[in-house]
Length: 256
Image (cartoon, one colour):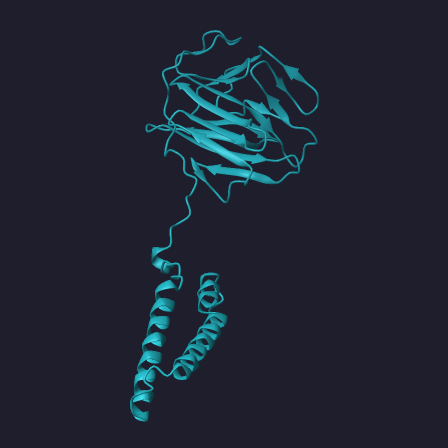
């Protein structure tokens, strides 16, 4: 019975364990007094002797019960609770040292920066870059500063819900659970973890060039703008490859 009590203790049934252990002690105590360990002694000596044996066994039971009792899992105080890991980006995107791809734009003016949209390209001499817009509302934009590039981005899913929102290289709100970010000081890649699909890619190739790939949905459009390495496919079915839009100042390079 005592062994059963300790078994229930290990399973977490504390109250039932106490009841069984108390019952075991009572049964053992009755057996001690019936055994008459001190039958040749005076009556009071028999009671004291048997009582001491019973007390000793009770103390052993309690000590073992305390020793075997599962210890509670320590909990951290509020100030010690680990903080959730926040998705962070580099403060600025800085140019890599990659060569600029050959494009239909040829050699742009010295002060211009070229943006590669797959096989298409556009160049501008501005510092406030409206890279992709929807009905003239920026979807992707960037600011060129002396410290590097500040990227702003708003991505939607195919139901028109915002899944990623970046303003000046800082996440605003929560990144969708199905997305993962791979970020270096030169690149920003966003993947769909469910199928390991790249949905946005940006790389600051060098001080004069950057590239963009991705799938860009918007609540006002039934189909997305798709930019891959070979073409730009617009929601209205228009398709461009090896196309150049140049000398646009700070105007939007792609508007759909």
